[in-house]
Length: 112
Length: 120
Image (cartoon, rainbow over all chains, first blue to last red; front, side, top):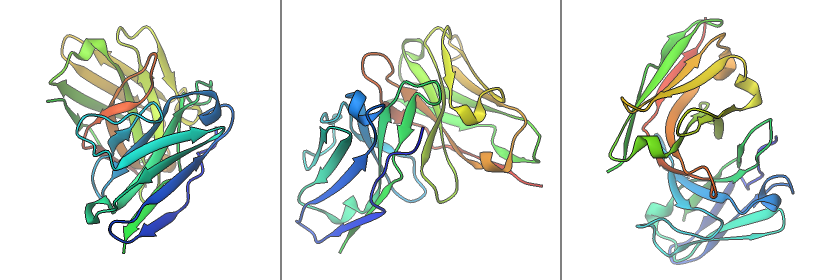
């Protein structure tokens, strides 16, 4: 099971929107609505920010939104803020013998 | 408040063993799947293994199957990862994670992690 493909980095100015893509296959992203996204600051544990493709846990700002089309999912951060600067990882349930879950390669968001 | 606290990491030689523990609190431990997820230095996240609420089902990624064993003690709210025949490539931060496995699959709470270094 190969890692999901994410851009290495994206950047934007405060107030702008950025979108991070997460490309998989019909065996993972395309085959399940179990796509989640995690935010990770350097040296810290990841934090869930999106689950079930579009849902936000309590406490996560509505500036974060998720979507999916075919074998690709996306995370959009609207109204970019300085503390959005972090690494972001997508994850999909795959349900295969090789691995139940597959994570993305990770994207660093830089606020200019 | 959900808390997951890992312990047991350290430096071990290739071929050696380590047992990681995770103490859970703040939620009904026996009602959740639990997972271990690891992150090699400077790399991305990798799901390692998970275990059902009653330990009747256990799954693991190809690269650790046959070497790592996940287990749990619901009475003591503890999760374990027994790691045998360790390789240099197993070097990583290991996170204990609450796994919302079932009809909807995602990781909603994470521990701070414990560092495992495999080196001669």
